[in-house]
Length: 463
Image (cartoon, rainbow, N blue to C red):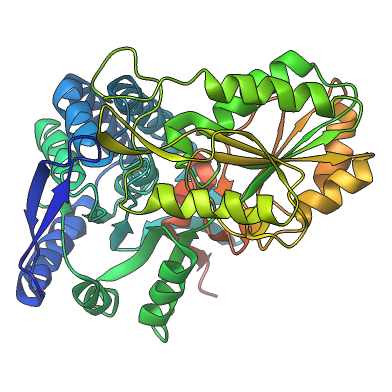
């Protein structure tokens, strides 16, 4: 096994960075350091923790130019989008800091003569956060900030595509004045992670990644009875009803499908349009797809960067081609491409009327590829959206909020949107069902997720 990982720049093909892999002994030593820091931090006041997280957010923003450029070089996100990810990280961290006092407050029970009863939230110990590469800051901060606020220590394991993001978090907490070793980065192979998950100091594992990766986390944790949060795959669906504002739907759904080159678990991948609007919608989203400017992600005019992983353009083009061979219609894009001979790109791709059962509708499409289908009613739309083994989000475009509430009760997803999509509100829990995962993050409930409840039951008069 190699002792370092080398990451290529998806646009230039040059080496973006190299990162050493930790050994079992190094990981165990780091875990001991974090656990020691956590024991003291767990006794701190919530106000102190919230202030640290706010300073951490400020430090990240101050380091934004370097952080954004590193992300762009490692995974190809346009520099403007990488910079926006830094500011969104700060917004989420500050929002969680504001929620912490309520989320962590002691909960008294109704008075009972002669007794005191209450529930307190205590830290779980060390939180192991295994983060992906597509939104390497946002997916990580959901657990990292909540864990620190709850009084835990953190080990952040970044993706092998974006290994520099772990040290970015370490730098920001160090600049914020965090206790030494409270938040540490660990870049390690899978066997070392499995060993860590088996250690008693680890009280929670937060994982964002593939369904198979989630299964491996569960296997590693078997018998430990520790908390696990799994944010896994997505094949998110949208419904454009007959009373929708068509222009708004086209604009927002194109962004939901193609932002970050479509590399998002909650990006829109299946759109079901009422037959009244179908032809105009297909024409509009195809025009929006063709308007994207592919190129150097460091260039100001680029609106879509290269795909992060080798082989992704060909795999996605294959999904589209198989659907077309089975009777679908290719409306826009469909070809792997480059820009002046550089970069691994897929043309933003729209496929209409993919047949049921095609892998374009069933399997994840982690890139700028969206399927559009025709429906005749709300019932058909709900059935089509639910016909997936994933259940992260669903988006409805309609002028009627009551209609969206009715349909939402029947949609097997963690979040239902109306007239928007592909967005995380830090005040709301982020949760999936089916193969999109279990557990939750963000919101006051996301902070509570990283604690243990403890009951206090006192008889105030011994006799």
